[in-house]
Image: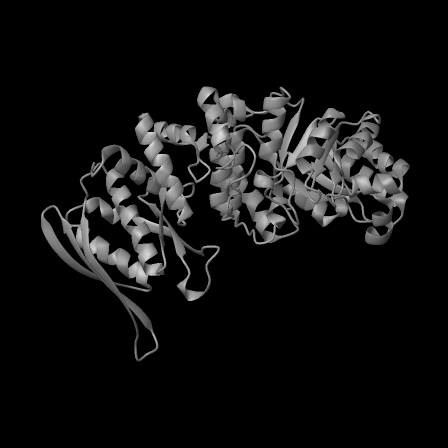
Length: 524
């Protein structure tokens, strides 16, 4: 298990799951827990057993289905109700019966919340904390306490907020996590209050929400002020603006502050783990997320590329490999010679000065007409090959294509596409039907070529985006189409631009098929 001197505590499965639009099944929660354990976090908060059937089921299945190597499971729940003994409270019983070795209790630390929300006295609230903590400790559980609304409570009544911390610690709570529940704190003021809480001699933790955009900064400020337990969520999930992004917190503390939190080999898996969790949660990953985003180490400006050509560290704060990410060179109309040279090298080409000059001019000309190569790496590679290799051999040549859209008597729309191609010395005519023009063209091309290129059976169109370009208006506007394709191993994007949306789609589709054949080993 992880070093107990400093805790990394994940609450994705409970607090993170409160994000709007995020709905995890029990199987999803088990999968996310395995990913978090592979990162090396110390504690995984599984949910609130007894409060809902899903969380109760999670802890039941976790006993036999989770083989955690690093983390311990924590069950979340509340202190006993006012006027009821902890031993007699059914929700406290559910925490005991969860099988989790750690219980995290939420308790009110804001005097107004005690009186208005709990509708009890300040002294009874302290008794609820004392009784519940000591009861669970006597039952062999390790207890953490989340001091809810602590910072707002401290501003309202500092003596009472600190008394909550003392009471929990004296009753046997190992950690009292100070919660910025409303997410409204800023780092300097938060650090001052954490410092005061540390003076109680209790072990202090921190739990921040991101409503001011400062959750990670607040967490780091709390650690500097003496907190030795940090809470957060994978990818910054959570209600409203989310929680502190645990990946960013861990990377900052380990790489910038020298804390030994997770194994180096696990840190090098962080990007993969972050993206794997997005697949389970079905939440689109933030490409600009620090450390793990696909754009976190992407460089577009020519000035950056010139410096990176000399030394990559001149425009990167760490080596991306430390967190399992990669440096990427983006090619656009902002690109200079260095950007194109580096991108060519990334693709395995050592460009001559003349090739570089020609390619830069072609990129800038095409982007002026509406193409975008930073979002379509495959199209750029094909353009690079054309520049370097001249008139290369084509896998197939297009004689013509046609699409018909028909509304049937039953009101159904049917698209039919016919393509006439030349490949491997043959003239091929094929027809495909689809639920739309692009789908019909895709099927027609496959039907025409799969006999000669069986690998195309694995090719799949996974995303299709259309954008009307700025500066043009109405139905005659220039359209840009981006198509993302997959071969079950990886994905690539291609781009087409034309006044006719079907023509733009055909350009992107033709390139997608060509690039897929290159990946399958059919060189030009």
